[in-house]
Amino acid sequence: MSSFFAAIFLLGLSLANAVNFTTVYQWDKLDFIWPSGADSSIEEIKRNFNPNDVEFQYMAVFGERLFLSLELKDGIPATLVWLPTSGKSTSPPKLAPFPSWNLHKQDNCDSIQNAKGLETDPDGRLWVVDDGSSECPGKIWIFNLVNNDITERVHQFPDAVVSNSYTGRELTDIVLDKTTDDHLAYITDYYSEHIIVYSRKMDKSWSVITPGMMRWYSLALSPDREARQLYLGRIDSTELYSVSVSELKNEGGRAAVKLIGEWTENPYRMLLDSSANVLYAAFWYQSYLSKWNTSEPFLEQRFHEGGELDAEWPFTFALDTNGILWMTQRNNETGVDNKPRNKLLKAAVGARKYLLGTPTDLPLRG
Image (cartoon, rainbow, N blue to C red; front, side):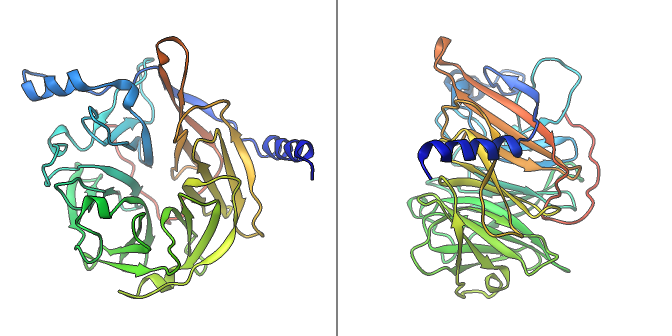
């Protein structure tokens, strides 16, 4: 197929599968809700803060709140924040550190250092992957959103599971597997060939080797009505793999991965809609989103075009329990003052999260 006809073919796919997103909020400059009162440390943080450096990484949604992790940069005072899904004000909301400013203190290992992958479960918990810092090891934080956002669990990974050396690990994404009596978390560690597994019931973590020098970055989980598969993407490859979840439950074991197909570009974020068996994917430096129906042979189809977006991570997204796909879109504009432009979008896609269950509705906080 010539490049011309290939372009026409992809355009047809794009138009045929387009999703109508509406804009919820948009910002030229993002800002935080700063604490009131005289505090010299906060004033110094505010002076060093650059709104152009705020970049969304991962997203989760529960009730009337969106939770977002931010890329760790100098001057970013908190890497885990939340936004309301709607509000009375016409102006876009500011970022609220979650659960409070008190849990965001640099190089204080009792605080969140570098939030990455996020997920919520049907019982109202927010799970947060914390990559730590040069002084603090990697952790999982579990917050109870129904009970005043209390910290329900903090699990520090043993050095035998995740390296205590900051240069020896890069924890990224997380998905949750709800079994009959437990919640299992599967986590990617880019600097290893392992998949990290955590059991909430046992409060224990272990690693499973995936031979072949595979360094995983993004992941998604198939529905639990079938023999569950964990889909895996790499930072340095367009290839999509899968591994049987049953092979991940054996501590210290090995798991064979299977090549599924190849995307057009390298994915950094994936998400699975369990109602339609659709896997969504976003790609490094690419201004479009794609999907694949996992019940059919691998075939990538574009479903959203964002225009010319000059950003490393142009999108992040999450599904809620009402069939809404929430998405942020970033564009590092080259116009006046080189202002970045961020949007929060949503679309009714009728999708269902891969986790089953009915969550408790939460009141709007703030």
